[in-house]
Image 1 (spheres, rainbow, N blue to C red):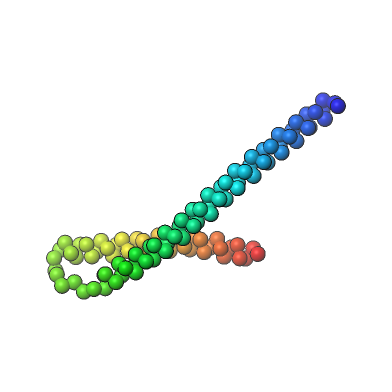
Image 2 (tube, helix red, strand yellow):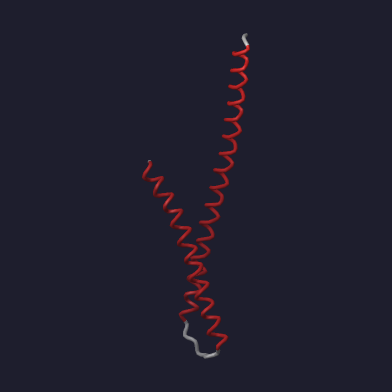
Length: 105
């Protein structure tokens, strides 16, 4: 064997081991992304349920003109709007990824 053949063999071995390590890391990253997506979908379901609950509470007319009660109601409305904004942003990005996957297949 010549020096060139030995060098090429070592380079091929290094490239192969690098490919194996990269494949393992990409697999782990893929699993992590799937877990995050599942967690986000479960969280969006909880946000939907809680938003509906808050909507029912907010639809009840107030019989007190207390500034504290009005403040709590405004805070609840702001929280509900913020949760819905987050839910729409997350679900639209998830739906966009699913739509692009559907177009590719």
